[in-house]
Image (cartoon, rainbow, N blue to C red; front, side, top):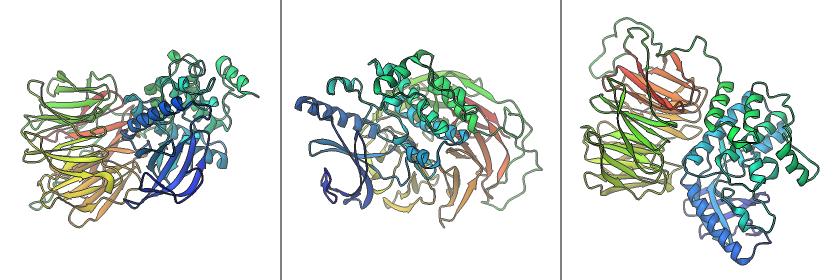
Length: 592
């Protein structure tokens, strides 16, 4: 592997071409002989001054950290397929991304417009926050470790540079990381925290918008001195981004911008001002009485009785990733990065119960009869609860990553749990596995939904025939990761929302699709109204939009919020729309 292409690594990954080399390792374009797909293969280079014992210990820690990073599931984090040891050095096998690094773009184009840099920064920060929630610090964020692949902004090398206290394993005096991007506390040998990544983000964005680094010096000692004692050189081209950069480059980590503050500031720079003053309820225009339709045809969107104030359910301490209504509509469940699932009484808006698993809480779903609540967590498990009492009924394990999707079959006899590597279909109440859909055959999974007629199971990549236990359709067409899926109530339509900023409305039988455009950020959420007439979408452009499911046309004006939207859900009676995200609150908006 030191320089010979066509070598086979791990018995299945053939090295094709050396495409990059730096201080931390070599990167090869490779080919997975088993699954017939391109991959990127990175050999991590260890410091030549290490003793055999230090080398062995560092290799073990690198592999452990890389496996932890492989469990991260986010479109802005490069997917790690495999980790191995080859020729005495750690090797990472990752998805192959065909796109330049941010460093190459800056070198080719020079300094970039501040709005573009703010957009890139928001995407990088979103990826970092996902890693931080899983207890992983990058340690070496820089333009070389950011790839621009189509509409994706992807952070790489998690699991390589994020080894806490790695200096104790290097040769005397060596520090892991790239000096110009290192935080003051990192240089001084203090404990590495999430705030170090925020400093590195600030340096990366400064370099992108100004074309030069904020600190420099003729020697490494002079550079360290500048980082530790001097103010960054004044930003001349950053416009409104200058204030964010100043907040990220505060030397004392206690005074540095938090990830939440930085996310809000970056998003505000890139987001165009709404054409009308922000509203507290969706602006659905008053129309005439809904037109009569043929039997079986979806009803046209209902008229609104006018704007009414939305209600906010407040209690989470971090981003809300998912919400779900109970079948009778009286309870709303919300899952958060703070590790809690809160059950809210919808009529009063009060929290009635808090459920805690292990790690962050990612997703929630009620059983069709409302007697069970399923939750997915960052500890690679799903849990079944009695929502009436809060009792934990069962823990469903065997996943190898965050459980990012849970769904009950329409008859309530089965549950599907999904993570990046597998969808597991299990029978209830004992949780015995009936089938598994591995992601080795497709790009990723991470979410799941049953068709209401009980015949199909949708993942982020395929439609699975439940009777025949086989893939009947691969969900293609998007230029980036699918973030959300939803069947229409009549099972005839499937909506897929993507990081390419579009939604595809697909006819399940004919496979025809309509592209819905209008969002200016990743589309993270999609849901159908109970009658199928409306579809709601939520995006990282801080807006929720309504669409006519029959025509694919927008209905009314977008609702703007002050944070990314991760989830939307209609109440069972169709009167309310719940939306939530980085604001840490759940907003319940009347829509008809």
